[in-house]
Image (cartoon, rainbow, N blue to C red; front, top):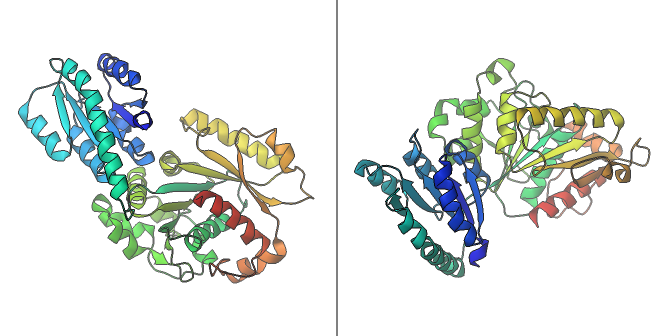
Length: 384
């Protein structure tokens, strides 16, 4: 069981990092090294068992440790100080650090004590799991639906996927419409509201779940929450990357699944969203022009430093025997796995789109259109 621990080393000092890594590697744990500025993103993206935090020159250790303990209180934080200043040590302890060692004098002490710290953590973790009865809120999953080519059907797919997750499970689900200029989700889900994501701007610095639920709309059939777009380009321009990051991190802590419908254009807000996402579902129509657009998107993400290989998966939409390309052909072309295949269903889907009605209305619907069946299969694979 000890070999399964996930350890994060936060350090910008190469000498200290190497000293620590030599010991941690011998323990055969999974160890990841990051710089302090990447702490928030990594803590949000993945739950860690133990975090070894090395004091940096730009010392914001207290704030980062407080954030770590807020996101996951069970994470064991060890602080390695490069200064013996008592105020710093007192503050990091108050922030939630369980242990601290002053370097370089106590490096050997830390290295000798770490195996015991790890063993005690494993025993405590096992005891908590044995006594656990109810799973509380912690770190939800962020799924972004995107396509660089307009008209791919991602808004219909993302909204139906979010609704299906809610209907098929007891999970807390929220759907976010990031098409700030024109919206679209409010029409698909038959929502009329004078409140939007932009109404969270005044409280963004102290944002919590109550603020989000006060602005979100509850979809009547599934009871999932929806944050609609302001549908105003001028208002959308006032929302910056910091706003998006804080909104997503709050939603992650408050909901099990955060589903995002992204616009096709690439801007700073979209880049921030993709970096915060656990999964990026790219909706692809199986034809040559869509493949060319996908290639341009991959090249752009490479230039921007966005990691797609470990997080992006393909959703084939409007699959039909009449398509120019079939799924078997695409498997040899695409660099990303095809996670879902959704059939063309104009006859079944069009009446819902025309009327602006949600496609799913009950967890036990006897008759589902082919589109809804395929989305349900996709959603159940995620839930399982």
